Image (cartoon, rainbow, N blue to C red; front, side, top):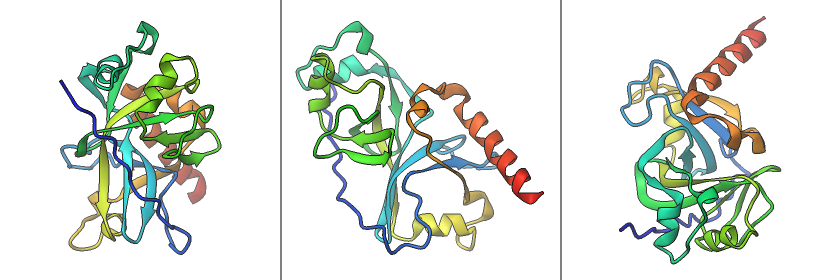
Length: 202
């Protein structure tokens, strides 16, 4: 039985950064050769000179459902709350985060934009069971993390990184992000990036 460890990242002051990717989507390039991050879409939660972290949102854990994880903290969810769990990243692999709409917020909640939040509190399971949870939500297991200046290095494409390390970026959409099909999300995001680049070119 899994024992979830809720990942509580400290609040990060991003006001002095030149390029801040918090609240953005990082989309792997089609030529990305990374095994884990191939065709990845990552919702960036926080970014500072000390590092960055986000949650991969387009790959599911095939063997685990949300109700199974809820039981590890003593909560029995109804069948309607049984959903696939998303594979958030290769770091803190037992940590759990809810990506959700803002009807229910807690002390650990981080606002991504006006329609999207991230919370790492197991009390959310209780709120869902009692009918007080968010209207839309997804549960993510694991974190994608970068050390200080690592993400900036990847985005530069300069040695020791390569152009293949660069990420495509889009602003994170509001609540409709939670309605997107995970299987077609990456392809749709890449298409959107190409369309925007083409429009800007002309």
